[in-house]
Image (tube, rainbow, N blue to C red):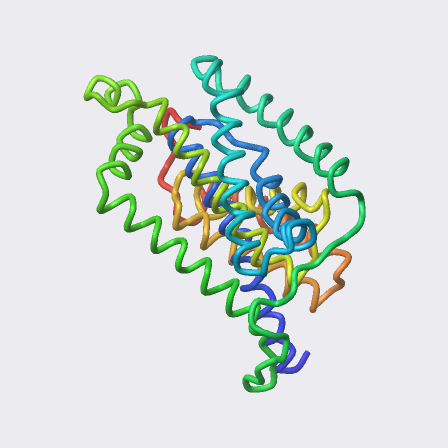
Length: 293
């Protein structure tokens, strides 16, 4: 393998891994406020890409407005899911809530199949498709959009949690929801916000990835699993670890596909992930787990 090929695989891995990181960020935000794993996160990614495609086809919206509309609709869906399915049973055990999210995932996927069909769709590149030559590799402008957007979302989320009262209230709920409630924080509202943020980050991942890897009603399954794996790899509950873990997973996948075969890339990534977790169960950037296992 030449130096240029390795660089090309790294670029591809960082690009795809950035979307895994955004999906993993959604897992982490909801886990921090509810202690549950939202297995509908991958469907948020799928809906982001699919709704952007069909906003252009059905409503004739230009690409920027279609992207904004798709992210807004998916965010609203996230809020509705929380209000209609999670809030009424929020005090039940986490395993019940996890099963509910699996049911929501199946429902969303089935609904998308009926609404959009089984075909594969693509969004046009945001700023053209002419590659930029860098050393011996080629970078598509959409690669820069994906990586840049992931960085901006992460920075925005960091500023939100550190500089705003609402963000600090969400952090307080992640440490001790009962104590936060006694301090006057509306925990239910914080949970709803976490679902909104989770859906928004997933939808953003879906719309920026759709011009590169195409989209269909069933892409959310694998993207959700990869996002969850990246989240575990970086450390469940750590937003920055989730993004870093997602990027690392994407790079491992890409290099595995180049060194061995693209057919084994998923297996290589998950085997390495399992190996790491045997050595460090809390993930690369996670703290040692206590009660919240």
